Amino acid sequence: MRRRSEVLTEVRQAPALRERKTATRVLVEHHEVLRGLMRRTQETPRSQPGRRRTLADELFDELWMHERIEEKIFYPATRDVTPGIAAAWSEHRQLSDQLAALVRADPRTERFDRELSVMHDALESHAHLDEEQEMFPEVERFMDEERLVDLGDRLQARLDTLRSSRRVRAVLRLQRALLRLTAGRARR
Amino acid sequence: MAQRTLDRLLNAIEGDGRLDRPGHRLEQGFAFTENLLGITRGPARGFLHGVWLGHPLHPLLTDVPIGSWTMALVLDLTGQKRAARAAVGIGLAGALAAAVTGLHDWQYTHDNARRVGLVHGTLNALAIGMYGWSWWQRGRGHHLRGRLAALLGYPVIAVSGFLGGALTYRHQIGVDQADRQLEPRRFTPVLAERDLTEKSPRRVRAGDVEVVLVRADGRIHALENACPHLGAPLSQGWLRDGSLTCPWHGSQFELHSGESLNGPAVAPAPCLQTRVRDGWIEVRRAPAVATAPPGSTLVHQQEVQP
Ligand code: FES
Ligand SMILES: [Fe+2]
Ligand SMILES: [Fe+2]
Image (cartoon, rainbow over all chains, first blue to last red; front, top):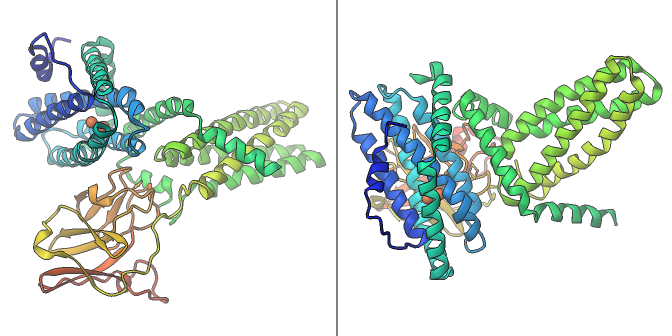
């Protein structure tokens, strides 16, 4: 638990009194966090495999949590408002698969760069083209503000709980370790 | 009457949202296992879907348990104990193979089909348990128990088989969902050539048909935009190594032929011919060539003029 993630510290240092946000706002801001992580991983050269790996791990964890809060809270609440929920679940599955491929790649290799760039495209396809451009505007139009703010609170609270949960962190660490362990020859 | 009952059964399953949670749990567990085994990114993926076969592998395998277990029923009636046990055993092997391929297909389904699939799979697991027990008891000489278990297991696979049929005929899982239109028959301008940038897929319309245009390696490719698996917009997918990946379930379609490389789509994405005239990209449906084998260069031939 010592290795505190960078995203985490940034978030923790935010002012204690948070303004209330709509669900879509919370999610878009978290998309920005994910994009930031992606960008920093891409900017880290192959000569710093340790940092690349740490960043990839963080992306793994944050994206995993992002998927869970959406699936547990946001999607069930919006499934009558927008038709794209089933597809969104499937896109999460794509992202999970790609995350697995990313952590299985050796950060010193070119393969890692390739997986990372696919990760980037897959994330943009889901978070931007689908959610931010199609699903969220629809939800904002058809759901009343109060409900959205309520949902936003729940999403934020859930995200905070997940982030600070030791159990979740342990499970994620175990998942990554297993994925790397079984990567074997596929690493090149 | 029977039809009404069956219909009601199906509707009840399809409308039951409580199935979603265990369904997603199961899928996530299965997904993790596939990732650990390297199946999602390996050749086993397409093999299990049946890409090599041109249609899903799963329905083909289900004939093995249904056939063998029907045979076992007959052999039980005629009192051929050893043969009956062998039939039960062969059915078991087939059922296990069908279970793996079925799960593999099921994980890429949505909503109602996903719920029906979950019940279908649960019933099959039950039947496998019963026939497994039957096989084991027969081996220990308890033929009566073995027969009884087989007798009780048979209606279970019958109902389950019905649900499997509904997945195909009602929900079109595993069916090529591309709409086989003939339009546009003539070259139709769809986009100014300079508006198509390298490596970013672009959705356009050619008459009633939605088409995705891709510029890669100096050529312009055109595929039908709706994925032949469940109809995802391919224009939201991403390009790698000469193929376009479907954003929903990750089928990769070869740009120059439309062939699926990995599944879950087992059918190709229909290709259109392209050309550039007066700064406009034009597309048309490749004229049907009755004698050409599917995937031949004649059918998919494309032309890009500077
Ligand atoms: S819709 Fe399923 S792979 Fe395209
Ligand atoms: Fe999402
Ligand atoms: Fe999201």
